[in-house]
Length: 163
Picture (cartoon, rainbow, N blue to C red):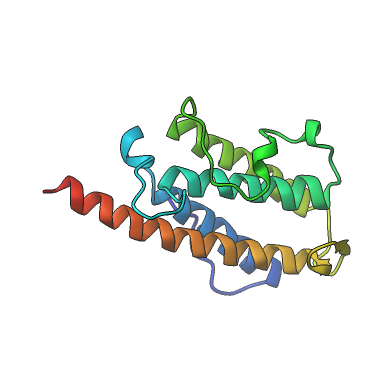
């Protein structure tokens, strides 16, 4: 169930709420699917409902644990070399565990982001100097886009299942 929608208040409250709502929207696109449905490839890429969530967990680790907290790979929960933007999910990773992995990574991201002010900055080799505010907004964009992908995949899966 999505967090309560907050429409007014402090900037940080609004941004964090929007991010949490997009995280939950992404999870909802896969919730209740069978393992087969969650892995069903309906597009030429590796994009599936489960892979979208796996990818989102990696994005949480990359941006918050690795970039902002400066953790080594071995210190990141669930980190693997596959984190570098891939949508690959191992056959032995059930949907419930991938969702739980994303939820754990999201909680850790919240804790890390709380340690920084919105205007704190760090240099990123790809993006240049970025603020915590920018990072949170980028994650909103990322998860909203992928929730949209997930909605389309879910619609196709549900339509196929009802035939």
